[in-house]
Amino acid sequence: MVSNSEVAASLGEVADLLDLLGERFKPEAYRRAGRSIEALPESLEAISSRGELRSIPGVGEAIAEKVLELLRTGALAYLERLRGQIPAGVRELMRLPGVGPKTARRFWTELGIEGPAELARAIDAGRLTGVKGFAERKIDLLRSAVGTAGSAPGSARVPIERAWPLARSILKALRAVPSVHEISTAGSLRRARETVGDLDVLVTADDPEAVFDAFSRLPEVAEVRLRGPTKETVVLAGGLQVDLRVVEPAAFGAALQYFTGSKDHNVRLRSLARERGLKVNEYGVYRGEERLASRTEPEVYAALGLAWIPPELREDRGEIDAAATGTLPQLVEAPDLTFEPHVHLSEHPEPSEIDRLVESARRRRLRTVGVVVGVLRGTSRPWTAPGEVVERLRRPLPRGPELVPVLEVEEDGAAREGVDLRALGARYLVLIPPHDGTYPTRRRTPSLPVRLLAHIGGTAESAPPVLELARVLGAALEIGPGTDRFDSTAARLARESKIPLGIPTGVGRDDEDPTAEVALGFARRAGATREDVLNARDPVGGPVRRSPAGRARSRSPVLRKR
DNA sequence: GCCGTTTTCGGCCCGACTGTTTTCAGTCG
Image 1 (cartoon, rainbow, N blue to C red):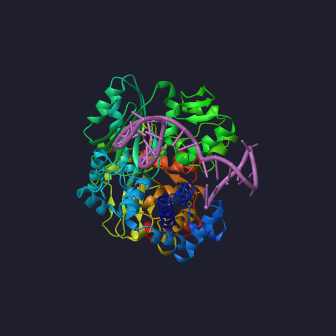
Image 2 (image 1 turned 135 degrees about the horizontal axis):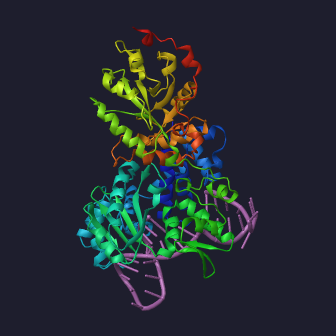
Image 3 (image 1 turned 30 degrees about the vertical axis):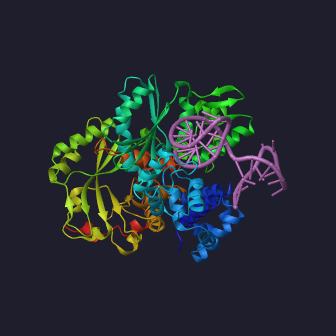
């Protein structure tokens, strides 16, 4: 089976090769189709089997045929033909910073250079000296670009949960610069994409030079790439690129809109503007010379006749039409999350740990917290909270939150002997399902409702069976940063199947931990409203929905022991 | 190659920055 990513990669390669051949608009068309396919919430196979490939934005007749060919045969004759015309190394030349299709093509056709290694040799041999367009400075830049090829900074995207703490630390440091007024991240981090290619930071400031100086001196900064009057680009020690822009206060909203993207969203927005005789750029919305809006993002969208669009939805997936017709979803927000379904204690908790948890929950204005009092895993020894901790949990608190004992069960852990589950007083289960979703048919479950599936390390392939399991059990699906972009994709699939989402609230976690923000971002990216979220519901007080499977197995021998 | 409230042709975002240039091309985001 050919994955969406593989198809997207093939289309991207076609785009690069067409670029090298000097094609004008085709490369962008292939790239756009590739980006759309990369962002799809379901497999191309499924879409193709319904005959709906053409419904994917940027996929027309020609590309649909090529996608079909890739799905059927795993190969693409058109791509093979292009590969035959252009040596593979020439495409690698294009990857070097400062080298685009034009320069790569010149190396190849004028100098016979067919790859980065050959370019390095050509530079050493002085073959570039005297060639038009290559002065000493440019040759120096190429030399260092070739030297770092393969580990080129900014080339690999990093998971958002790794980028978050870096962004937070940079924002904190820049806020401390006296001349800085407003500050925000932009780009894919603000859109809560699963991975980010670089960090974008926007500030308004009286003294841009002072901001750039402070930025350059941050301990995380390994290298200053470029610095102009309004923009500085650095590379962090880990290789992540950060762009800092200083904008005038009057244009902060326009700049924030512009640099948040996505590219496809902005392109769509600008063509809409043109239809209305307007122009949009990072300085504002214009009619002729007159600036109509620029101060805030809502003003910018309003000037185009649109409701403000949450950043997480800005991917050109229909959000602009929805904003025009007032049908954007009211996305779930942090204050909606009043129920934490699933928080762990340390391995040997003292009763005082409960006090800290309560304090943390109060700060977050949580009404209910599910506290794990027992962990039953198939592979390791069961863990249960000490009796005094369980006692402490049961003591009602004068002013919230309500603490609810919860059992976490992994795979066949529920069948383990020797644990007095009744003594723990758990009210519901958090289930860590096997990736094939076979749990309810093969395993026995205690007579407790499963409220949450905490899916760990899942993949796109494991999403459908786990979602089906959630549906059968009437459970919510926990989302958050994870491997293989499963969680953001699964969030969208879950929402489409009316399966509620469980969002970690961050209670009991380190303040630096990005899990809560990332998970909320994923849920919003999936278009989730508060109705779609377990955390915003009446948690356990009301009647708990019980699945047919759960009822059938309610008389579990595990619970009847003792 | 895609797309459509200028729809089957003729457009295709737009500005900053850099290097190599006397006015612009290429790259980047």
